[in-house]
Length: 349
Image (cartoon, rainbow, N blue to C red; front, top):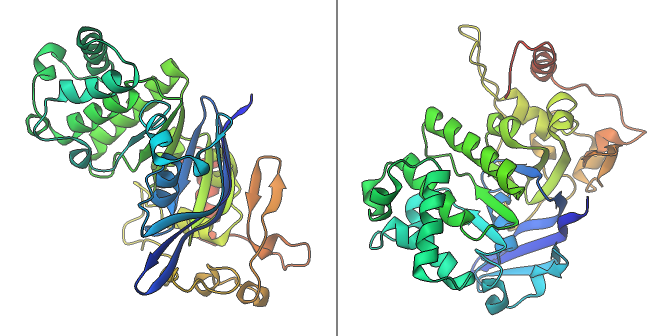
């Protein structure tokens, strides 16, 4: 299957009074039609900036795509003007943001807001657009579509507002849907419903999805492939099974170890990654994760590691994979979690 999206060595910076913030530093990944890619990492790792670069939403100034390619359906989005991106944004690529209230206009009915993309991009009549909008309201699981069509955002709960935003994003049958932490503000029950809804819609439309999150439990539930980001870079990339059952980067070990278990033994402490992410005004020399990595080698503080190939689907940027590096196993907490997942005692999905 041909690739729908190829991101090659993407670099995005923000120019502030304090200096250049190198928010995204050489990110590369690809995505095929019908696939779901999860991008995970701590706050400030560059996840949302990457997604906004794909949408052409980096404000200039202060932001700028410094270099790299974003090849979507044969077009390099990084080279398109804002006017050209307006014809792609909402039509071929849509985005679901973290807080639905920032995406919805409180003065317009939700029906009109779903119709808006159809009227602009599909040049439909209001009658046709309304018919499709009602179908979308039903599709995302909002009952009494005719009644709800005339209501305003404040008349909906948080979960229902997120469903409205998903309906808006799906209105023009986009080839790529970007979901930027769409379930963070929702309770666990509603979160599960929204994730199931997105998987169901993907099965029906065969659209590709980029799912941005810091929650590895969500990743296991929705993704085919995972890109782990740290300090503006992708440090590990692979299938869900690669990353969960055979993690290679110490940062990925830290993320897996810090996942809480529902059946956690009483009194057992949760694991935390020590330290804080680096200041991207002055990115550190070598491996940015080295100061927080108890297994860091001398070379980690001197030279940035390349992407080492673990398998045809799995890559990680850590000097621990070099043939001359000492053999270092994941921490016991990670090994225990992997054993329990393989034995079915912990169902991450």
